[in-house]
Image (cartoon, rainbow, N blue to C red; front, side, top):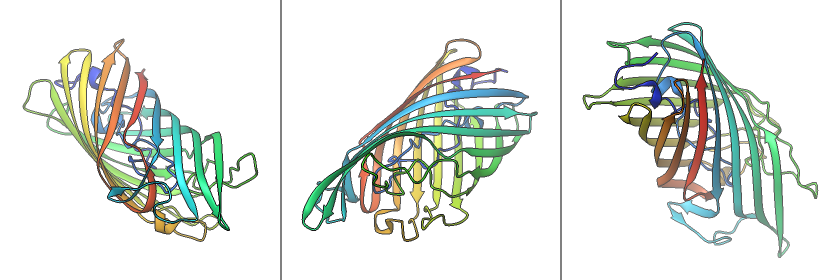
Length: 322
């Protein structure tokens, strides 16, 4: 179904709700990360009939800059037991989104995490370089959705609720048998509750539209001495269609991450405020399939303790509906 002003070609602001471990993009001390670009179809171009969307996206985040508060620091400038050096995140994310009818639907997100990490372990005056390199499934998210149509077909708003499940491993070790830090692991070991609301509408500018989404995520318990911090995300986006099959997009992504807790947490090096700009483009290669890409650039970051950050992040993907 083609909607007025926001044609189906605008769609590839696509599939997931948050990946909401999301990164400087939102950071942890060791730098494990997902892009915070919002590619949630239901916030940006909701289906108003039954059907299924499948989205596959790849994202790249190279976190190689330690940061303390609102300023960059050099490696080891602020003394820590571990001096974080670099984390390269290459995430592949599959999202399946299904509408039962005009009101009810669900979204399932399945990430595959490829992560290279190195830090310097300060041990009795020695500086020992430790590294990890792994590819592992991450934590699956399942969300139900209820949406309503407003004054015209392109005005759709609704709520989403669901869980992040503890499907990812949280006991990954390197070749020397050293256990990775909990914030580096592909999974948190916890079940988290997720609640979100979204609004999508046109603008009085020809071929233009906007969306907004707010989402919260809270762990429901502690697992083996670790409880990840809460997460709050606010996204606002603009879409313009200069051509029927081409969409230009711009997002403002804001993330607040609370302090991690428990004896396995690095509490003093967790928690952050990040604000990023994310320009993107999508192109409809067929009536039902789109290619898309985004670049994300942080414009404000305030991080507790010392955490690794990235100067930019990028993602590309393909989305199809049937």
